Structure formats: structure tokens, C-alpha cells
Length: 164
Image (cartoon, rainbow, N blue to C red; front, side, top):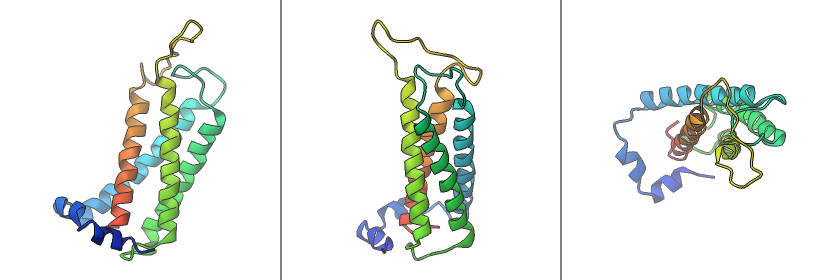
């Protein structure tokens, strides 16, 4: 698989628009986003573990939480190995990078599905929202999981255009 061919087909429009991003800034940003991804995965697990009621309107499926945690930890570990070893550096065809991105996308989708518990419930038999000590609403979860989505989009963009 040659991802630089995709970038050539796009006419490097995305890379031209972001010429102000030097490789050092991008590399630092990707390392910071990787660390933040680990924080999001771990804090989501800590916040939602156990049988006690947690913030939101519905309990989160343990299967969904396990997918989020296991895929997230595997994604961060695999992505870190990819970044540190430089395997496939400059060629854009590293299978470990593709595996890490796939795991990150799985984690992101699971995290967004966890956010669904904040949707308002309607009907006579719906349960009231449950508060917790982390925040007074969904703000922290929304910030974390939408930030994760943006981070994974940046990872994918950087990988496809061989910026990392």
C-alpha cells in the first residue's frame, strides 16, 4: 500500500494549506496527542468502572467500555512503537501504523457511543440523569471524546501524507 499516492492524487492541497506547521511542531503535537489519548482512555475507564451509578442517563455497557479500554490501550502502545521505532518512516506503508490507526478509530467510535448516554431521555418511564463528582454535566466527556476524534483525524492526516 502506498499512501503517498493518495496525497499526490489530492494534489497536496492539505499539505499546502498547512505549510506553517513544521515537522518539529507536528511531531511534538502528535506526541502530546498520543499522551492525551492515553489519559482519555484511562480516565474513561476509571470514571465508568464498577456497579455504582455514574454520570449520564443510562449505564454504559461493560462490553463497550472494555472495547474502548482494550482497543485504546493497544492503540496507544502500537502507535508509540510506530513513533519511537520510525518503522516505515517516510514511506507511508508501515503496517504497524495502519494497525494503530485502526485501533484508534475503533476506540474513538466506542468513545462516541459512550457519549450517547448523555442524550436526553424522553417518556414516562425514563430515568433521570445521574450526577457524579467529576463534573456537573457531560462537558468533560464531550471534550475528551471529541478531542480524541480530532486527534485521530490528525494522526490519520499525518500518516496518509507521510508527515510522521
